[in-house]
Length: 158
Image (cartoon, rainbow, N blue to C red; front, top):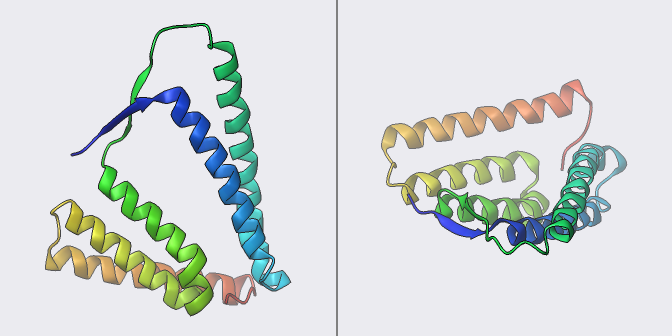
């Protein structure tokens, strides 16, 4: 298992700014959807933006209070760097490419299958059984979410 050690304060500062920019980018992208199609992503992103803003204020406040201390805090931030990077790049590709080109159902199935498969490969855990389970669970979960939004909430997903 790979790990990375970085200064926690610096990581909080960078991550809080990044999350705020990501929320802004997602909100900018949701304006292209119809009113009903944008409702759920808009609400979820607003919640994420509020928590990101609190995180931003907290991280900068802690930085301002502890500027005088000379002790260096080290924190094991990421346990498995390769899995984190695969998931992170996958989410960005899903949000900005797959979702808009292929729609929710096909894009989500491809996203779930590809990310779980690549993580299994990077962890050297890939097997026929796990790949099959990944295919089935990804397909069922995505279809259930599609059915829920389409037929229960009456929200047409792209």
